[in-house]
Image (cartoon, rainbow, N blue to C red; front, side, top):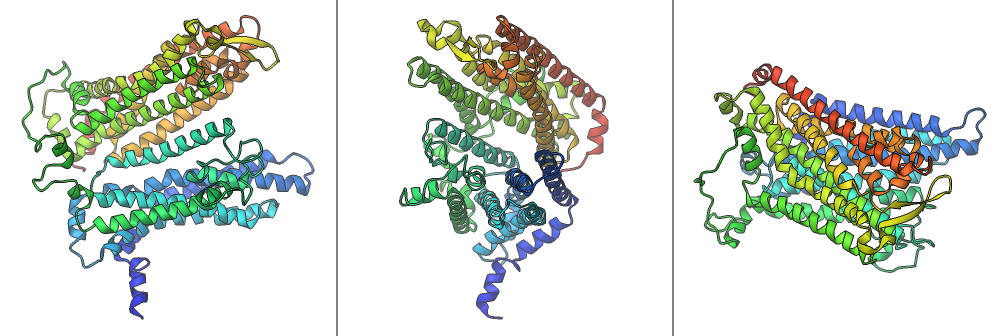
Length: 621
């Protein structure tokens, strides 16, 4: 066999690292469950979509083709979403395992080249993601039997999904090679992927509302479309409602981004992936960015720039709370400069953004619809980030101590199981309270602005809207009680997220399993409550607003746009708005009680079975 062919094979199919990863991971049952669950979800959704979009009785070929096209579009979006969700899970090992310095020390003693090491890790872990993706190809092919689904659209959807999977994979490998991260960075990596998708979707929606998109009405593709796989796919599947620019309208990079966003996404993801592979290849045998960030004296570069020396073990004495576990959880989270900077940057930046948003509205720089849209987007993003931070910290609180042996030391002290679990809960919630204050302030300052009559401009504080029946009513731009109802539900909800994370952290062997389990449970519970509250708020009088308070998302949305979200109650009569506000406040009180009750029940069950659970997992790491 020619040397060149053997060299190419060593980079891919016969790469020792890739072969090892594929052989070992193929024996793991969780990968089989993930693939089976992935296909089961796609099959169920396709069947449900076909039955729901096909009229009863005799069906014409035109109706059958339309049902097939709409079902294909829905399942294509779902596939991209599942790939974005599952890719970080499959690639998590590249960060949590290969980032271990001992693993790299052994790996770098082999005669493998730098490119072989990087591509072996990439292809070995990316194999399962791409296999998962193309396993659904026969299912997509079935939609062609109904008509309305061209084969080119199927392969285009797969290429867009593959571009997302490859980009996520190369980012994970780059983080692993940098040696700057550890096991807890897996969650940050996961959150970053989801947050990026949410931010780009919000920016695209805002640009289209301003008429800055392509198409005659300016509601088509935007410059953001090529940076998001969902938007790129939408430009392919919905050219009528999301039109691209006419070919030849633009030149250069802007032409491909606005005229063919899907192609721009694929090219962009491949180019960025290639750059990350190149950068990883250069640093893989030099110790990664971790060694580059060190000075010749061994002092980290950021400490040297701040005029500080090496880290010392001695610390000044501190005042400890009555519960030392609670104090440790609240204080130890600020043990490093980066954590302090990240936490207070979020707090200060969020407070400034909330105040600036109200000022911009008061000076009429932004109109009412933009103010409400931006306010909802900002508050939703802040609550989403806080919930993910709470899940990450809680899910690693006990499992991390089990892995590093700290839990064994704590169990030798007079600290009781109840003191330990309640201390964890109290400490984590105390740490998160400044973060919770950010969305509370953001929506609260807008509510106070409406309560004050727009500081003398009543036309901005109270707006006229049309109800479902066509009646014109006057409602506050934001409900004045928003600053009180938001924290009433947010604090218990975050405590609920923390408690579920502690439960999984106590019962899981490792931090990664605890984080994934917690995310799944919280996502299912909050998703069900959110969808129920979202649907019932506008369709059910009185009871609907109360149910909307069960989820922070539906509650915040109702506080900002009560006329549309609580339409059925608001439109019930002259006192409809007052009735809706009372029902919303009552529902918030009930929701707070429900979350607090769940927290108390879970913590009681954990304390009761604490010794049994700890002994069962004793010695695991």
